[in-house]
Length: 505
Image (cartoon, rainbow, N blue to C red; front, side, top):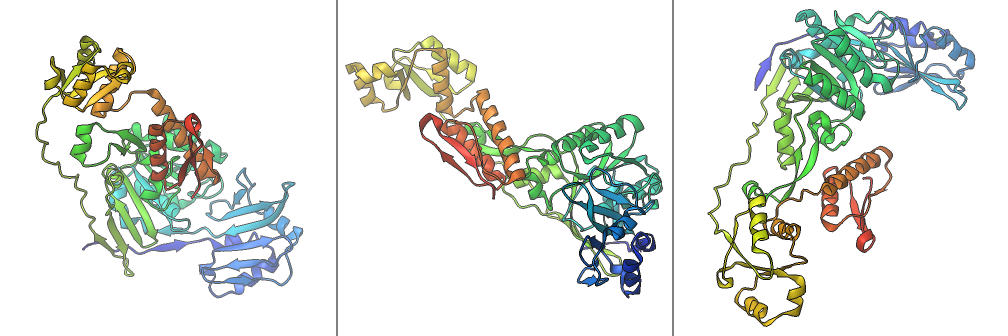
């Protein structure tokens, strides 16, 4: 186990500036508490007693309930509330969030303590400085935003890189026009409302020529697309996203594009044998937007996936991801446990060469069979005598009449296949089925797009979603896609109206 250098963690919170916006009958009891350094937030709800919340306890600050005058006192001492009902205090990281009634009036405040923590980036500093795009995952409150702020400062101050922070709710650089000193020389672009974050991301690249763009909470398809656009321009991205781990992100149809996305692929017979898998598999759609993924499992334990593309491919093949584990010791040092190298599945020995399939056409055009064989590139040929054939191809109408010659062929060779019409299309479809070639029908693509959209709706609204009627093959692919996202599904209806219904977990 390798050890990294030690680094002392320093914390600043400007707590007095937050206490100054609270009514005296709330502020005074807080100041008398002995462990205000651990304070998480103060809750002021109309008609209820004010509370101070700590990691392991809640303290009632005054037996008298909060009044509208108390709320007005605090509202008048913070910045204006934006569309996301958040306000702040100039040049601090404190956040004041409003609860409103149906008329839009403020009836409660959550005053959350913002702390600048210096030294947290040291556990992954070598990864940050390598210049690769990094995606951070972890549960709320584990320290993702703190790490973003530290990374921006290190890259801007220590490496002199041009860093732009896209700050949606002033979480990274604090409130006001002048950013918090915790971001160093990095520049900050404020986002007027959350739904405009993707536009500001693109504006940052087009107008300000950054070498690094830092983004907190990529959460929509538009933001994921903007992130891919930025990465394709050669800009280093450091961002957080909704999700606690890699597999959780892969299963999110809205954000899976950040790691390349997934799609069902139908393999040819030979490729399926080579991979030793079923013919329909899930594969990565495109190169990942981010090169490295870091799971923040807790404040002192990180899992680093150094090659996102390889890890996603391995997970889709059913392998288990084994990231590098980094643990911060109490003395500030870091222990590194190397991950297990991802080895592609061993190539199986090439199959023994098989004999070319011989087809005898009976009442079917030999020229059309030969043309279909050439166009599809299958290992088959037309033979001139039924006794030498592996397959006899005839017409369905003729097979129903069972003339004597055809009955004799069926005795000599039990592989007799019938098609509806003596056309090139029917013959080509017969060969595709015989050699298990994927169909090029665009209706399959449409069916899978419909399933992806339905999965997004089910995950977002937790309500079942019925798809349009499909044939059995397309329904099977839709079931497989739903299963890949961990969602149950069923087929309902009869005949041509049979369809897939996707259910929430």
